[in-house]
Image (cartoon, rainbow, N blue to C red; front, side, top):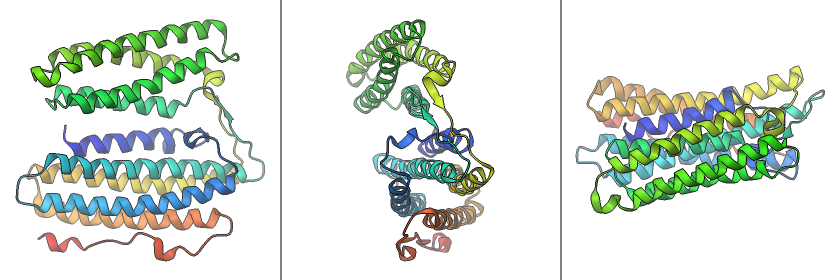
Length: 326
């Protein structure tokens, strides 16, 4: 699987969890002082992410145009930057949409749960991606070890916190405690196998030890989903007006994600030499779509942010016409 395909999967996962399925919880960015300060922060971060995103898109175009051999590390850096920009923009949009929705008359805010299901689901995705890289022969043991350790920690902290929470029934607390131990044991075996990877250059043992880890993580997520309101909290109850206002923000954010996902899909085909001329024209359309959607999103967030500052000059602009690539 190419870097572009991996990026598309990650941004689509965040969009599915936050824009399509979620949107009625505020835990993604943690506790905030007030809705006003949170919206201002979302707006400022959205502006910065939009600029970084368009620069990253341009950098991908430059890589695709290059006739020489690609530097894989440089490609990975650019694609990681693009991915993080879109994911952060998605998170900020979901958070802003929540606050705009609950601010409407008749809406009731969410009750936070013990578990942040978004972070846990994202951690599982990133660990799966590490294993997939091993399977595909990308044997970067140190990087994979670091990524797996960081994301296993998300699971361990989540389960440990839930196991110690008094509101969680004792039977569930005991089960969560056992899950924590299983995750720690399976991850320790997998991380140990990665230590010999740089010397042996053979990932088969690592892939073997990844299987029980992936299985217990899947079990953990499924069990958390069955935990109901005690573990996951109570979603917000939005009025009709609040729901409409929220959907406008989520819908525009989804437009950014969709255009980026299509851009990455086309980039994958161009990298393999498919439909070159048609592909460049499609990339132009995607780049314009991302720019337009980002500007629309920023404008909408400005409208809901108290005492808005004049920011039009800060909005992202299309960097370069793609005709230079023919």
